[in-house]
Amino acid sequence: MPGLTAPSDYSKEPPRHPSLQINAKEPFNAEPNRLALIASYVTPSDFFYKRNHGPIPIVEDIDRYSVVISGLLEHSKQLFMKDIRKLPKYNVTATLQCAGNRRTAMSKTRTVKGVGWDVSAIGNAVWGGAKLADVLELVGIPKLTRITQFGGKHVEFVSIDKCKEENGGPYKASIPLSQAANPEADVLLAYEMNGEPLNRDHGYPLRVIVPGVIGARSVKWLEAINIIAEECQGFFMQKDYKMFPPSVNWDNIDWSTRRPQMDFPVQCVICSLEDVSTVKPGKVKISGYAASGGGRGIERVDVSVDGGKTWMEASRSQKKGIHYIADDANSDKWAWVLFEITADILHSTEIIAKAVDSAANVQPEKVEEIWNLRGILNTSWHRVKVQASHSNL
Image (tube, rainbow, N blue to C red; front, side, top):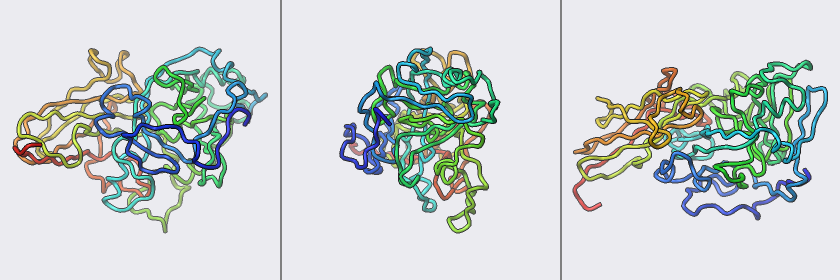
């Protein structure tokens, strides 16, 4: 594409923060440590997880960069950055989470296939850009359209990013047109992250943000938008990121029996402690994040400090000084919630956290119940073991 190129090797990668935990070098996949992740409600771009399938594209000429919208339309259209910036700008606070978040813990039950992630393949940012619903109006698709007059029902996003899973072709994904054309769904063509232009790792110059949905659908380095009749047939929609039962293995898998995963389920993680921590007996702060997909808020976070025998409710917050209420107008509906509780820990024990979302969805107790061969959507109760010790820490 004029203005944007996909390198054939990894010699021109952007700089990254040295504290990131690198899970794969080529392509680069990394996450922050737990304490850095929950240090603030809005995640700085340096500490926002990096999830890539190939070398990071390079912008050669921003003035020549464009996105072509075509497919089941009367007329296709080429949009330059200046055209997108002319549309009303919206800021949407939204949490992105890789479907493989907490995969490493799931792999301890039975081996799974995929990049290993601890608990920080998630982040919350303020994304700035044009609503996709406004962009689609430029090609004659009114807001709230479910099907175009030419039979288009899905909106496919194609990246400049080349990946081996597509045999060197581009990364792509799709969402239903009914979601794309709904202004309330807040789907963005974003050019800013936390008030700054996107950096290269996060999709510069333009990316899609699909709030409430697994990160795989928020395509970076956007090259084209296609209006299509059926959902995208790309690898990451049809042969990956699908939820299978524990009985399915690589010998009996039939990818066509499952729909592509979209919304992420309710999730909750303790970040103030590692999986095994030593603490001084006494008061211990237990804090972390909780999030749910589809715009559902967090109704409750329950914490146990005796291995699940008894439970306490943690306090929840988003913006400082504003009391968080799930699904309230003052709450960020697409964003995570930070939780905190202080408890007396006098002896070695297991601490557990679990969340309930505003639709009363709960997390599964055991990872074995949701084990799947690709290791996605590990939303089982989060457990950390603490050893109480008076020795110098």
